[in-house]
Image 1: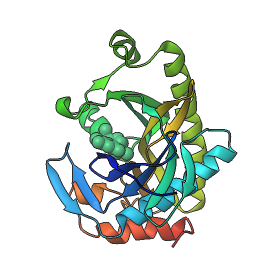
Image 2: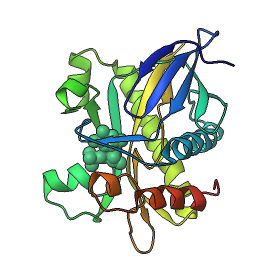
Image 3: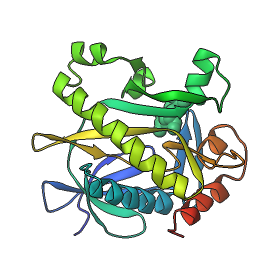
Image 4: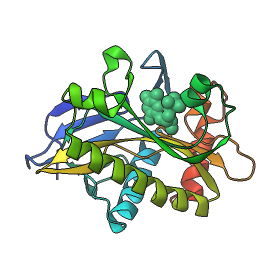
Length: 235
Ligand code: TMP
């Protein structure tokens, strides 16, 4: 399978057309941004780590009954995926208080939640991905009730599978963001699952092993990505 014209370049990936109209190739970059692109940098090796980690987790999720856009890993950085229409919702699941949740609610980072939470952001860079609820999503025509129900169920299932997977690697799954796509009348998991899109903490020391090290200028960013990669057995 070969890359044809560039369809879209995002903050972390390029997307190319292929000869198959139902298949695209994503090419993961080492570029990192935060705060809606305000902060820019490079995390050396990130593209390959995020690509291979996403594919590994997506294969596991498929086995557990969660359909994904994965077709085939083509190289360290490139993967063939089903061409979906992205549902313009960022779906965020939290197990432990951190980030915007802690800030908004005045709850110390690291406080375990009594049950996982789910929230939606409207995927819109111009607006800075504002927090919305399912009524807003319905009112704006971003998704149907049936789609929201499917997405909610799948997101909690993804959480259960990933929590267990990371725990076995000595990693606590604090929270994560996922995206879904429409494909041939169904909803499937799309985009990526990586230290860019998950908060991952050492299960014992609670050391941050994710993009917060970049967002918060903590240093040791590359080492943290490598550590996750090693612990899940991919390095
Ligand atoms: P938050 O606490 O800043 O709302 O982030 C929640 C989770 O979503 C966290 O795991 C990081 C991830 N995330 C993204 O993947 N992309 C984003 O643009 C933001 C703001 C968060």
